[in-house]
Amino acid sequence: MFTVRCTLGSAAWRHRISMSTAAAHPVAAVCQATATPDKEANFSACKRLVEEAKGRGASMVFLPEGFDYIGSSREETLALSESLAGDTISRYTQLARKLEVWLSRIYNSHIIINDKGDVVSVYRKSHLFDVELPEKGVSLKESAFTIPGPALVSPVQTPIGKVGLGICYDLRFPELSLALRHHGAEILTYPSAFTVATGAAHWEVLLRARAIETQCFVLAAAQVGRHHEKRSSHGHALAVDPWGEVLGDCGGESPGLALVEINLDRVGSTRRNMPVERHRRDTGFYRSVEET
Image (cartoon, rainbow, N blue to C red; front, side):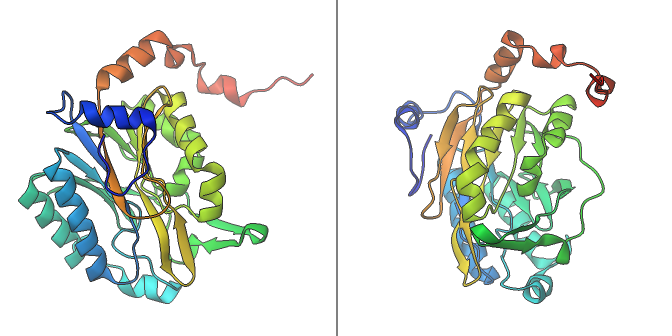
């Protein structure tokens, strides 16, 4: 695994050495960015990350929630928004086509763009972050400017495997990840902009839990640092394997990326050796509790 200005543990550093030659399996890039209300600057920063990832062998690049912009108010957020046919989407589809790389992004939705520049999947965020934690300095009401999505979408076949789509706060709902796993997901992705307080407390443990319970790879691109005077993000873009081991952590300081090989044999062996899906009872069992 490679990084740019990212924090790595010793196990990840050894993996970095092993990937200095051609990777034996498809490579995914998990990116970390600091979006602001300046869409042009955000595009330039993400373009550099995508080009860097492609140059280092990535066949699919994951960008964080809101990487096109993070507004400083409800009014600014709505004013900067675009339709899926808008100029911002067009620029990213052109970039994907030019570099022949797949992209994953958020724009009120999680969008997968293939290497031809086609939008092949769109997932609209289901769970909105309406949370007040006064003791932690957290106050966000996402429903003030976002409509919740009506449904999950089927996992999409990509160069790195079958990818199930979630977004940020969706991470806290295991029902979503289990449904995607049931429909064939091998990789779950949660592009995010976790707050500093909730990220420090819950980010890594939630991502590892989703990986362990679904026996999927989990890739979570993240926002990091100060976006404007009202908001900062936790960072620590993460890649986790189906056993729950952290393969890469981009740290909490600055933008960058981590590359990770996606060896789907690890999904298969984990599921064979601990067949939790086969052991799972039918849904009715979990809805009924006997009174004692």
